Length: 289
Image 1 (cartoon, rainbow, N blue to C red):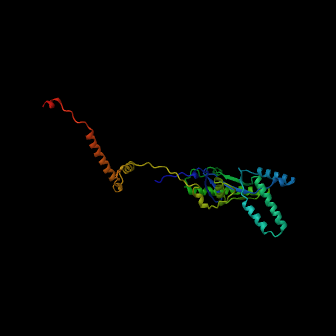
Image 2 (image 1 turned 135 degrees about the vertical axis):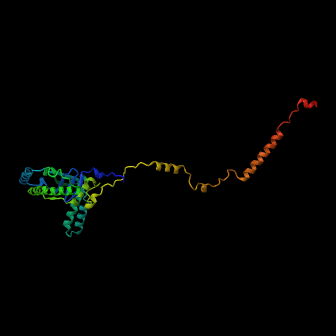
Image 3 (image 1 turned 90 degrees about the horizontal axis):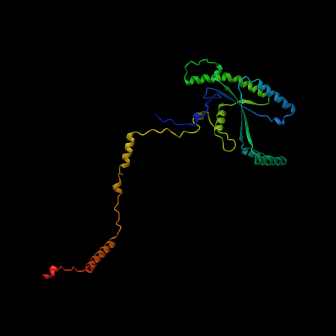
């Protein structure tokens, strides 16, 4: 049995993204809508009042839960600067070219003083399997059939809700559309893998979502058997096969000339010891004889 590897994708709430829907591990299905924005401060007083009344009517018309998500990110305006430089270079009118240059200087000063943010607005509509009641709870279905049934029921329940939101937001001057599977994958990939600087569009395909976003590198260790441990110990205690071939005669610490000089010194020392030693004193008995 192959060891099971740990993956960070197991801790995500998303089970799958298919058919422009987000399937959660809890069994719920979410539909994400992207909306535009309006600058409320630039509207006249009458337009502001009309916008407020239309927004109130939109909230009162909702008969289902609706989540509003606002994402703020540090914007990367490098491409915008490049487009301004290209427009200035190709502009034949010197007055317009001068105005574009002044606008570039204004944008550059604004970026140095303040942080430019990119805001995106999303509306999320959710579907719960409990909306269809307890129908089919006791029936046994395989995973594929259950998933297909869930997607079909979610599409039927979410379609009128989506159309209602699109119609009501259009009265506010806001364009609303449903995100595709490709856009959903890019959105969640950007949420879980934020770019260090600026916004970054990650081109992914729908098949890459089935692979872990972070490849697992930790596996459960398998205990070694007694035979394996014994074999490892025998390999450690056994001397290498080429040990005899590697043994070379160790050169003597003293050379031949030094050895002969040492023997001559030892012989001279022995003769000097004989001459220096006193003669033995005869005993009394030997003198009488």
